Figure 1: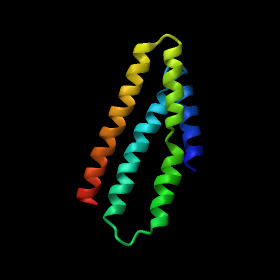
Figure 2 (figure 1 turned 135 degrees about the vertical axis):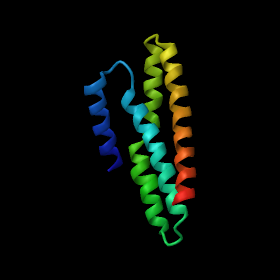
Figure 3 (figure 1 turned 60 degrees about the horizontal axis):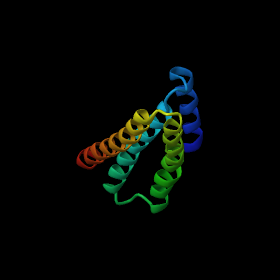
Length: 113
């Protein structure tokens, strides 16, 4: 499910924004980090949630949706094309945005979940 959704987001971003920058992968990883924060935050507040459901959602669905191996290849491709500034911006932006979004959503989910 996560992999199929990742594929659809990738296609949509290519159609809307073109192939010059890996916008789809960036969006997938940032949104996936937000989803991970939400799911972990909400499920940690519910003692009746099964371990199997937690693993299915986090490792299965969200893990299938996010794509760090593609992220690495995209960053390398930018670098190899001579776009070092874009590659560095992409790596730093992905890491900072993903971590920040996960942190914010996790804190909010724990506080209000």
